Image (tube, rainbow, N blue to C red; front, side, top):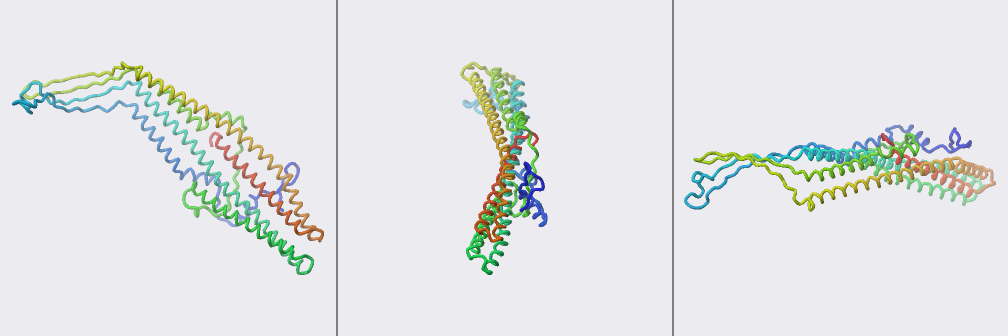
Length: 422
């Protein structure tokens, strides 16, 4: 059996399957399928991110528009035109008849326009932070899909190693059977063991194909465009201490987006209070009167907030309630992120201990048991059933160790979602 050259707790441990796969892949040549490449493609060809980027651009455009005055209005009209008597529909018989052209402009207070522009800017900032959170989530989920491909591929290689050993044992058993030193039961047991291992390998091949198709969602294109070479076991950057990660949660894009929405709600509350300060409009008209003097008119209009208790006060109360709601959402988000981070970090640490235990206290003894059972069988003192049982136990332990290693890798990948600068 393959072993580490180093030691864990002073004892030899089984070489990780990634080394076996690396050797096989290097011999086969061809392009490599790496975690970094999968994450790059996922971000580059992700419709969710493209849509979010478009929403941020729209909010930024609205921020510019919200700070401007309303468009002026051009007014054209005919006033006091007779419709009966002998002067009906005639423009030059009555001194009150006039054709007018005018311009009207509403002047929104500068403070209101500034707050509206600030509100849209904060909305764009929240969208930009959400884009960052979505980018991290896409990288994380694409990485998890990559690890879903890594697991059956590694497991299938382990099974193939066992099939090769079982085939060698079958050949030796058939020779012993023909010479009369072993019974037919041993030959049949060896063949059945190979068949079961081949079926297990077929199951992992099926899972590998399904995982490759699922990975296509993140990389774009078709499953056939993915490299066929063995995926590499990624080397993730080391994780900071838990306390450092918890201290950086306020800088996480999700938390930043929630804070920007709180800031926006606060601006909207200030804008609602400014509604009691009325805007005004100015209108200038020029009137043409046939046969009479032309006229100019100037009007100023100011809204009168006479029923503030029914409108402005209600709007202020509604805006304050929306601010309270956004603050509650932000506080709940912080709690959720902290709980998820702490729970995953504890799992990651616990998995490290379990991996060490399996690598030093479980797999090596079962490896020795399989070798001892085979040696006893060859010397004529052991049974072939004992050999099969020992190999089955070793394979199950190897698969369990593989699952623990990949489970810890999945947890680490999820934890990197919380690392600043990720």
